Structure formats: structure tokens, C-alpha cells
Image 1 (cartoon, helix red, strand yellow):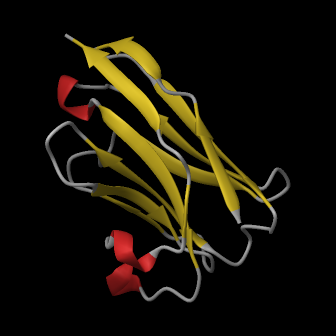
Image 2: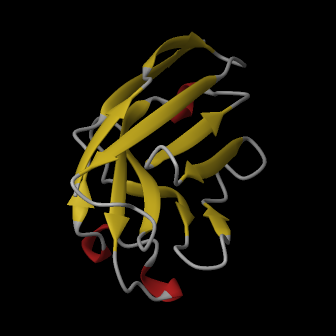
Length: 125
């Protein structure tokens, strides 16, 4: 699976952005998909995930209520709608996909087999 993230940019605090992750090579239908981010000087962290079965969504506490993850199987794509953006949301955002993932692994980057190249989100205050 090849993943291509897009949609990043510069936005003012309080604004919104929608990130997209287009997949090719294989359908994402059977994969758990997620978004991670990495701010300068910090480790990569889990932002949000969506299970392959059941459609359950998961969010880091820092983004809960502001971000929404979704997938469109017809377009083989995953999205991250980000609202009420804060300066601390500034980071490179990566989409990821993993197979046969148990719930307790969802927040670990090592559990994902495929990664997009990242898209930069800069929130100006």
C-alpha cells in the first residue's frame, strides 16, 4: 500500500483544515488507519485512529472534540478534519495503515506497516 498525504498548510489559530490520505496499490478496507504527527524536536505521537472493523474511532486527548477522522472506501482514502486549531497543533502529519491490529496497539507507530510522506500543518497565533 502506498499512502499520499496532502492538505497541510498555514492556518490561523481557531481555523480549520482537512487532511487527506490517498491510498494506492491495495484497498484500505481491511486496514486500521491512523494519523500521527511530529512537532519539531518532539517524538511522533498518535492523533487519531479508525479501526478496520466496526468503524470505531479513537483520539488523543489533546485533539478530542476538535478533530474527526473518517474514511471513504469508494475513494480508498482517509481524512482528518481539524477544527479550532491551536499553535500546539503545528507539526508534520502522517497517515498510516496497519493490518491485524489489536486495540492496545493503535497508539504505537511501530504497529503500522505503511506510512505516507507527511504533510506540514502550521498554525499561526
